[in-house]
Length: 165
Image 1 (cartoon, rainbow, N blue to C red):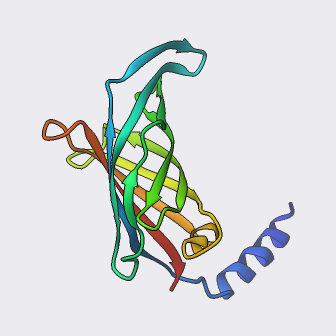
Image 2 (tube, helix red, strand yellow; image 1 turned 180 degrees about the horizontal axis):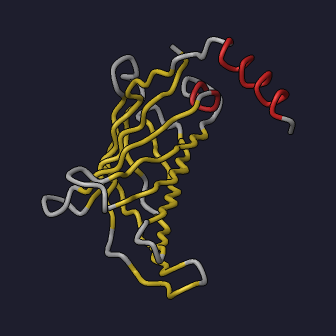
């Protein structure tokens, strides 16, 4: 691309107001897990799986109706890359107190080298049935992940609703 065309395109970008992004807490989940199981090495790194055995969740401010339990049966697939980065892909279900089942697809990137607080952020895709939780299908979410060991064999997932500010 000629320099003048690039400059023109980027000048247009600079002249266009950027929307801000805000994040509000959609829900907090305590996700109980079993022991990690090794699946062997692949060309991308060492593979593991962590069974999800249950847990509880509750909605953040303004989302009181979003509460219930984490269903057993999901799993967190993990890849420990050669550069030390962990890629997690957790797929599991939440059952709200009203009976609705919400599927959580959480993809986490963890960098333990960042200290004192490790980098553990994710993008979360939620799939809900029609009804009071259907709004979850129409929004983007980001997440944080913190271990709860040794107090509990669980992780703490905070799911943040992203919006334009």
